[in-house]
Length: 168
Image 1 (cartoon, rainbow, N blue to C red):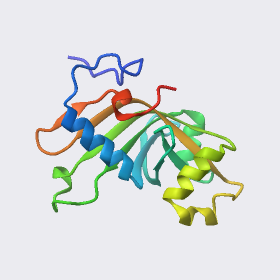
Image 2: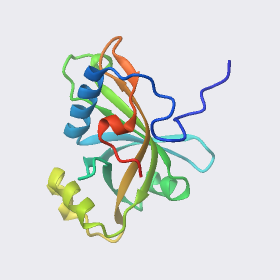
Image 3: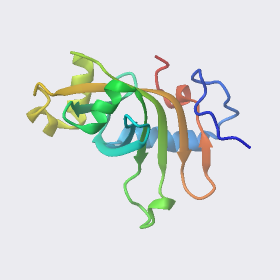
């Protein structure tokens, strides 16, 4: 049996019926997110994980403010494929029992996007101190796949459109 080929080529291909309760937990998790583990690809193809601040844009897309001095930014500039792991604040004392969602897709700079800036700084006002530094840029995450774990046995893939995530 071979390895899975990754997320569907189009946003909602390959998804079956979705558990509505799972979608509700996922939407709440995304709305409340302040940080995520960002996984990018090193030049040799090895995965590289780092912690980043996130905010949801007006269109629902995850946004990040990244420094060009960071390894993850160099990785994204070379290969935009990435994943974001967003976890709920510790509620149970056992992080494996808490809700978390993994988004797979691509991340790219948005240039001088006033809406991205406004949404990110509303969630992270402390970032205003460095948001205008020349080496920082806002990045938008385009979600192609979403895998939700809401606790033991409450697991499933969710079409990004059901999470309010844009298809572009």
